Image 1: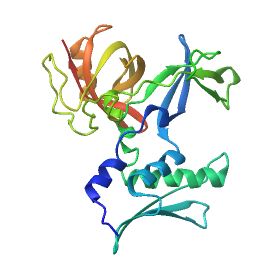
Image 2: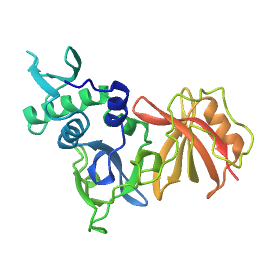
Image 3: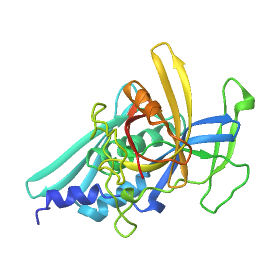
Image 4: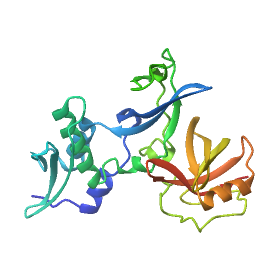
Length: 276
């Protein structure tokens, strides 16, 4: 049996998926003066993950095993046979889902375990994106969503949204590339306070659209709308970054470069630089 090149396998497993292999789900919804909107997040299906392992290592050199715990959760392991006497195994788990409990739980566990091998892990670097929800389909790519508000029926959201366009760095070879942003590459004290004509490494270019100041017990928080790739994303500035975003005195349509990270379920600024 030929021994697999571990570095090559790791790189190919972690490679971005083609846009038509990416699916989108609604994370949460909101209704404001601009109408219903939703935050959508990308994911890869179980079928796409299985195809990735088949194509990279071969269908006969990987296997998955499923175990259900007494509390109902599913543990799934994936093993890759690297050589005659070498196997790499990783595992993760997930709870049963609200819809199709068993199938959904097993599928979720597979996806979480695949991420340990790098499959689809890059998708976690994407900032959350707000999309508009329309009553009628606007493109052939539109996806239908329905969100029922448990407390207020008037806040129910149903309709179609157009999947966001992925940035170049999140596309496979042949679709274009740029460097992937790292969530933790720049700490809060490593600010580029000067205006720049280039996009610093680890940051992405956006267009500043609007900003709302919100006052909380522990300080001021800015809810900021940026446009990236034709899509609107909402990111929050807290602490020192709230002071920095105020100091920049941004105006609508200003070009900026930003980096962000997830914090308590929200995307917050790590760094921001005026561009141009």
